[in-house]
Image 1: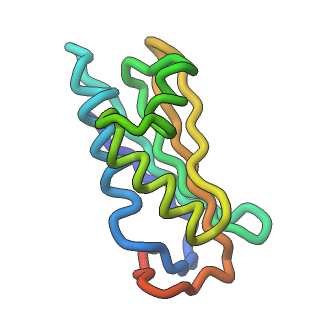
Image 2: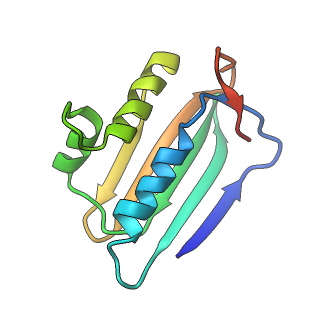
Length: 126
């Protein structure tokens, strides 16, 4: 497995704790691990307008649109970590995760954090 970081310098933002860990863990566990040949996880942090965009991308097994909806919205025990992150982001910022995926090509999860974010229990991430 490879991990690649693309971090724009001089970005300082506050994000709630345990936002990135479940997403990176899922990229490894559900995206890369099922592939015999392994794969790559890319983490990038970039300014985008008045927000900071964090992308976690893998070249793993990917998932269908139906599965993405299930992971984000299903009330069963499927994707509970991602559901929690999604709901917490909505609570903090008014919008949640953006997930794009293609079967057999990989998945990309995008988090946008407003540059003015400085809310409650947030911790410095970058």
